[in-house]
Image (cartoon, rainbow, N blue to C red):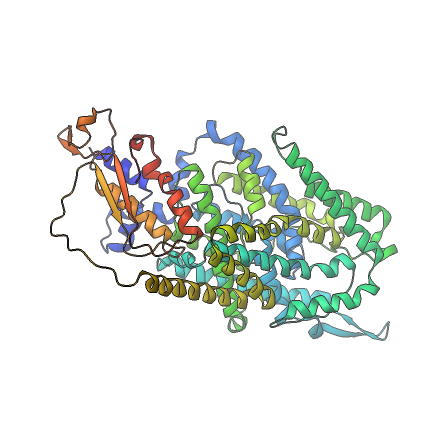
Length: 602
């Protein structure tokens, strides 16, 4: 039954054409077509797009997310150390590229706080303010040449983004998507929490209207906090008032959004309303002229022409680019898998690497800075009815309209408002501190990984902190493996001379312990084992005495497994990811299909 076999492969999430492209040198017409469809997914799903079922949800979702891109793009550009308009570019070009090459239907790619603060560290290191101080004859003092400084920082951001994209594409082409398995969930959550603290500290200068010197290297965050505290007596009162009013207003309206979530068709666009109101007040009151409140400044209309990044910068940012490629991919694939599991489809990890890599490398040519996916935007995209990548493409069209005709209206927007938007959007990451008591009750070693990652990320820069955190995480695996071997001691082995396979029962035994680095491989191997025992994917109503017998259907033999036994005897320890894997194993696509409802687990 060919259709049944194809259905089984589809439910397993196997990409037959993709594996064929990699494993076979032969190039026939059908094989070339399959290869093209797997490498450019939009060619596969867009012709089958259901306008009746998906159009309205994708339209509402796209407009809602596009509205969120405006304030977030401008705000995260400040983190990256570039003019706000380049945040809008980064919310346009990469989204269109991901629409063509991405496999997740629900994540919202674009600017992201953690990636932006990592970019900001690079731009401020290679283009510091001190390099652009010039003498002003009118005032007889040195002033900052903002125009040339920003132009140089844009070049640096584009170069590191382009290089990080190349790293991602190369890793995807060599099927290196598994590298993210070495970023365990406690490590990722601890890292993003530590990076969020870096983000908050970097925005304090806009909140208080002060100008602290930039510090780099280990403990730079500590030095920055100390300097900010010393500069507090010089706080610009007008800037502080704008910050506090904006923060309180955003929190109140966001809580109202949460309270009325089920009653509202779409969330209140609180951030958009905030920047509109703040811009109008700033323009009417002249906050910049009367009270010295720093504003966004000139926002040119239109798009930038493509420019190849300067290759001379690559040697200075190669380490930063690799860290950006790993962090951006890790965050995107983690969120993508959550939605894929929830809605029963497959996210191709290697294709995601290529999609993000092309988004960054092509985006770098158009002066964008590195992107990943945002939890807040992705949740809005899902909750407002988005069902396909069309929602992302529509959000890009919203940004295009803003960039071409509306962006210049926000030139009087106070930067303190953008900083406030960043603070409020980080509340989800700050809630991750609640992981500590949860991990204390479930797995103390994972809690230690979480805390160590947080501390290392805070004390060092995000790139150095990531490397140190991965090393520490791997040391805990080695330690737990060694400790479990010592505890097991000498185990008497029994020789099994005969092994008889019982029809209807699948016994799955892993030869290694189950933890974050091999949890996904365990799921894939289990799905392959089940598939190999289902010659024809059907689960008919049969009598109890027929469960262990082969059923004839259309001349094919169908072995109907009604039980799966997971042999966990080699498992020395379980971390939190391993526990979640076992809990969610019944939700695997091949096992959660209605036709497999007769399966039992032991």
